[in-house]
Length: 79
Image (cartoon, rainbow, N blue to C red; front, top):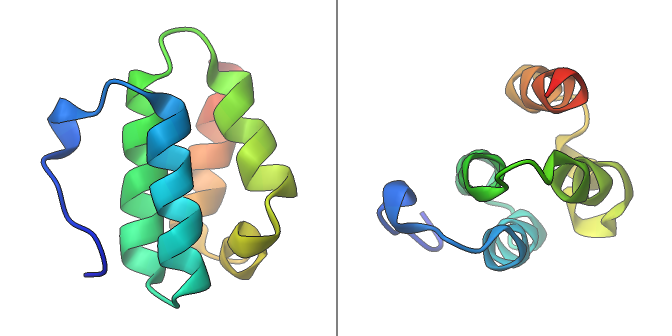
């Protein structure tokens, strides 16, 4: 993985999104999705910021067809 960390230690959704974007830009889709999950878990009611990143960050566009990202995105819609 590009950047690994204990996902339960993430306290800033914005930081986790930034790492996800960097991982995706470097071609590490698994790490990017893991960090997006961490961002969602740390969002405490601000799921829209994670959803917005998934929808609009150009680095994350390569993930849009990934089934796991689609499940995460759908969960953010219902959150």
